[in-house]
Length: 98
Image (tube, rainbow, N blue to C red; front, side):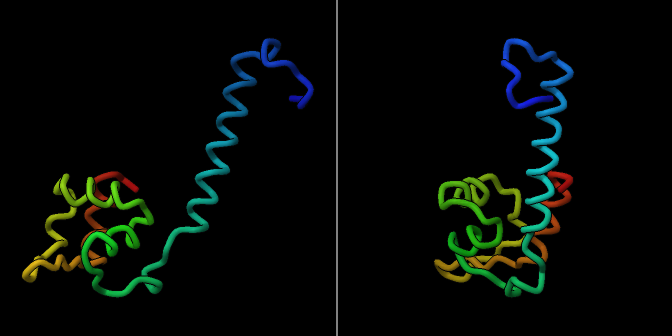
């Protein structure tokens, strides 16, 4: 499809093709940028640890912890949360088929 084609003139098939290729490109970039296990320490601590593990914002890290998805990977020592990175990634990947 030409870049000079007006939006009103494209067909549904053209739109699907463009969206499909854009999604595939984003997924390929995400896979290329995925953190490998060797880059992560065995344990991470607290909200900043969840932020680092899942490469997300503080509010998303709070939602992940509050949802209970990775509770099996979290132990609490006093006021400090200790996250087992292997368990957390395994649970998250199995839950979301990632």
